[in-house]
Image 1 (cartoon, one colour):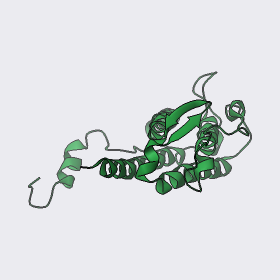
Image 2: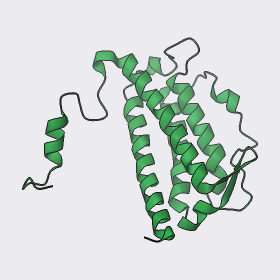
Image 3: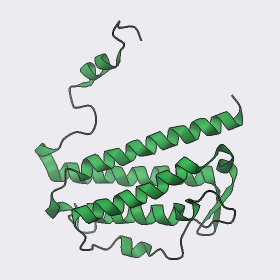
Image 4: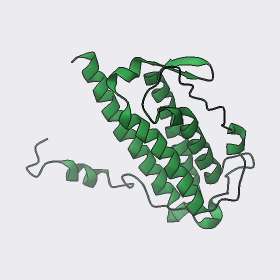
Length: 187
């Protein structure tokens, strides 16, 4: 397989996986009550609102300047970003926070959709540190996934027994695996 084919495969995979991470986050956020958006699990912890604000702020900062395609000399930390404000509790309600969430993901996923295999080896600077576009994507895959799983833990803890699983339910692995097999039982 050629390097370009591997790069195209990577882009296809990361696009699908990050859409899946977004879907997981949305599945958790949909289970929040209006009164819980600003509830952290610990005194210095992040609420769902703060995590949403931070994720969206990061996505706009990192990827907003690449929405029209890759441009040499792009800085992945917007001068307009106020990162510290992302960690302050605001007064936005759940609907407004879901709009913030959607706008951030739209920027990130749109950029992923428009990157070419050749773009992956091009430079992207973040806070003065030079990365390849591939390295910048991987940095954000880990970052965004980590925060989405924080959201899931936060909401699962708040929901307790009312939590609706976002994956295979406990005790359901055998049935799930059986459903994944072709009808003739041959894998």
